Image 1 (cartoon, rainbow, N blue to C red):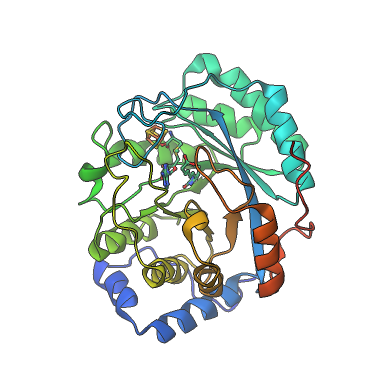
Image 2 (cartoon, protein in one colour):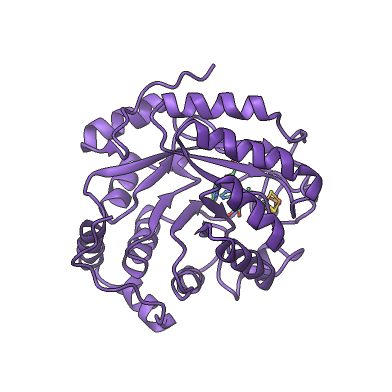
Length: 330
Ligand code: SAM
Ligand code: DTB
Ligand code: SF4
């Protein structure tokens, strides 16, 4: 990372600071965010990540946005933990398609020790393909976090999702304190933290302020900050929420970039419903990673050919020097 001329990262932001950034005239906000971005990261470079659902559906948590919760009728078929060789094959094709990072997600509330040997083998397999690795499996105990770190897991994703005030409207089967306990175990084990949230769940601007404030007052900042635009799923309580406008999404990315200058800010879920102009602005104000491939965990993502065209049109390149190739995926 370059970052020689950037101000030192701060974790003492107030909610007023964050609200003030959101309120800036759009041009001033975009200029400030892009300036910070260019101080810390190579311009025009975006990290390509691939996502794989290693265990789908049947989750005991009641996250009101999620297709995989057993509390809602979403028509999604549940499946068992994938086989390690199948995960290795998907990681290999992700690498062949230009991905630098591979993220594995499981629809679990927490990790069971009986699954640890397979999870450890998956991490080793992904690392052996030369990929940055990330997992998101629900809550972890300290020994489980250490076992994954020892296997070589680079990042653990565990989102706070929204503001402290709106949290109870989104999920009631766990608390924010539960989330912070797992994040502490992840840090303690020496892994990097991937922690972000979702917009477009019916929250207000003040909740987007609260969410970014919660992220940016962690010390150190999460090294990776995924900003998801809700992928609405029929049957979930939040599935009919009003989406946030494109410019409000871009403002959220820009404020995240300014607050957490050295973190990778990801446009995570939601690109399928986003215009190319919205994505272009998000890159301009500091987003520097996307998920590629036509599936996220259970919902859709833009076709690779569409993303390749967008990269060509914007003059973006994949970080890590790999060409953004057509995936070898069947
Ligand atoms: N079960 C684990 C957990 O919740 O931590 C890991 C998997 S979960 C699907 C990972 C993250 O994806 C969630 O924390 C949430 O922020 C995001 N997510 C889930 N469903 C989503 C949706 N429909 N739209 C946008 N983001 C979503
Ligand atoms: C994150 O914040 N976004 C990704 C990743 N972490 C695991 C997941 C998005 C899931 C979108 C809904 C789905 O496909 O089921
Ligand atoms: Fe389960 Fe994760 Fe979905 Fe919540 S977001 S219901 S914890 S899979």
